Image (cartoon, rainbow, N blue to C red; front, side, top):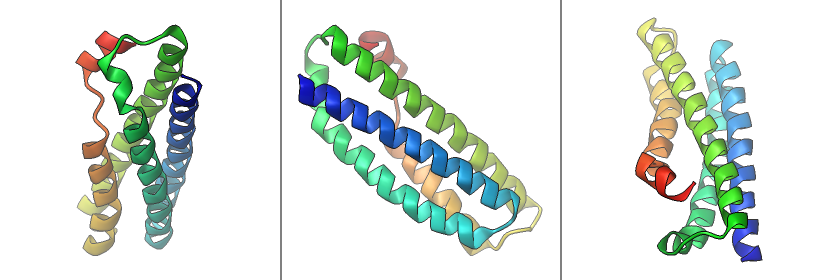
Length: 134
């Protein structure tokens, strides 16, 4: 069980690091520094891979009732994941507004925006799961 809690906490920390990188991406976009935004997106990709790997390590827990310590770690993880998704929605909106104004090259826009959409697609947290487990 200690390994499970450790992996959940590692995953939460990875989400918080991702949240920080998303903030940096947002700042780069606001400055219209598309090259920097693309570089940060690459760093985000590494964190996303780590999150996915850690998710695989803990996926077995959902087939049985959760002990309180695991529930607590899972709750922290879910909170971090929700914050990341909220930040991503803001960045996607920002990217789209710049694209509509024609202030970013289509190629760079697709690269940065595509990273966010791909990540959101792979990290859905269902309301049913939350009600059942947290």
